[in-house]
Image (cartoon, rainbow, N blue to C red; front, side, top):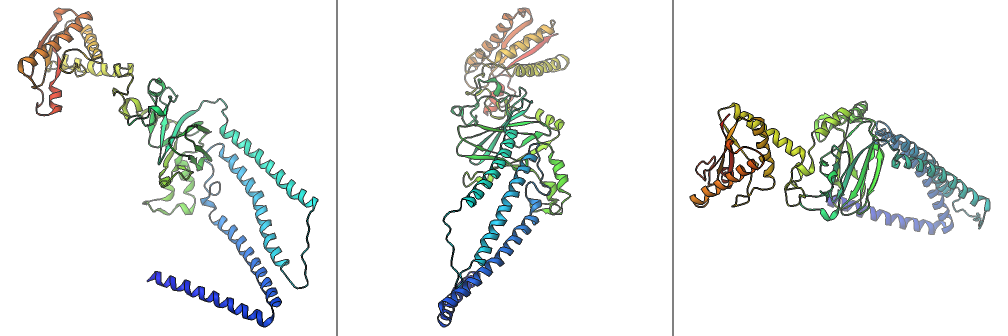
Length: 493
C-alpha cells in the first residue's frame, strides 16, 4: 500500500510540473518572450541567493552540531604524540580551503543574481588579463607551498626513525581480516616467505630463522602508553589500508611491498573513556550493550580504509592502550605461535622436530624430577617414562626419547642408592609371544642406553611383561596407546 501511495505521489508531481511548464509557456506567449525571460532570470537569481544563505547556514550548523563526533574536535583529541601536529595541519588546511569555499560560493550565486540577463545589458568579453591571472596563480601556489611544507614536516615525524628503542608489530591484511604478529622475548620479528604458507603456517614464517620461534599472534592489538611503536604492514591478496583514526595514522597494505609507520600512544583506553564521559552524547546507553553507556564501551579501532571487497566492513580489530606494567603482564601470558598456537611443533613442517630446545628440555626434566621424587617418597614406586618411544613395531628408540633417558640417568646419579627395574609393556594386538618379546627388547634398549651413559648394571634390571599389565582398555586406540609404555620401578633405595 505504501508503495502505491509513493508511486501516485511521483505521478502527481510529474503532472504538476508538466502543467506548470504549460502555464509558463502560455504566460510567455501572452506577455512576450523577452518579458518572461527577464522575470525568469530575476526569479532564478533571487532563488540562488536564498539557496546560498541556507546552504552556508546548513554547513556551519551541521559542522558545529556534529563536531564532538568528528576526529580532532570535541572529545576526540589525538591519542598519539604526533597526532597534534597532524590535527594542526588539517586545521590550517581547513582554514584556507574554507575561505576559498565561502568566497567562491558567494561569488557564484551573487554574480548569477547581479549579472542576470536583462534587456539593454550586454556582456563584456575579456579575453586576457595578466594581473588577474598572476593573482589567481600566485596566491594558490604560495598557499599550497606552505601547506605542503607543513605536510612534509608531519610526514617525517610519522615516518622518521630517531633511533629510540621501539616496539615493532606486524599487521598482515587479507580478505577479510587482519593477522597481528608480535615479537617474543628477543624483540625481533622473524622472516616470512609466501612460499612457506601452509594450513599450519598462515603467515609463511620461515622456521629456520630462530627469531620466529618466540613470535606470537594476538587477537587484539595491545600496546603500552608512552612507548614508540613501529607497525610493519603487509597484505596477502589485494590492496588494503591500515587505519588507526584516533592515533592519526593510516597506511596502505600492498601485496609484495611492506610498508610501515611509527606512532607513540599518549593516553590509555580507560583515560580516553573517562574523557568521553564528560560529554552528554556519550552518556546514552550503548545500543549493543544497554547496561552500559557509550563511553564505557568505547574502544580504539583498527579499520581497513580501502574498499577491498564485499566483506570490507568486517576488517576491524580492537586496539587497547594500557599502562606499561599491564602490558608486560599481558605479554608474559602470550604463547608462541611456533611452540603452542599453530601446531607446527613436531609436525612434518618443523625443521627441529628431532630435537628439544633448552626451555622444553628443562621443563620436561622439572616434571620428571618431581615424579621421581614422588616415587621415592610415596607408596607408588613406578615412574612411567611417557616420553620414551620406539619405532612402530620395533625396539629402536626415537630421536626425542634420548632426552627422558638422560633425565632418568640424572636422577639415578642424584640418588646413587636407588636400583630400578625397567619394565616394558605392550597392548594386546598380535600374539602373546611376540608382544612379550617386543616388550623385553624395548626394556633392554633403555637398559643398554643407561649402561652406555655410565650407570652400573648392578643397579638395573630389565623385564618385558607384554600385554599382561594394562592400565587402560585395549578396545580403543587411546587405551592401547597408554598400554604401550616403558616404566622405571624403584626396587630399592
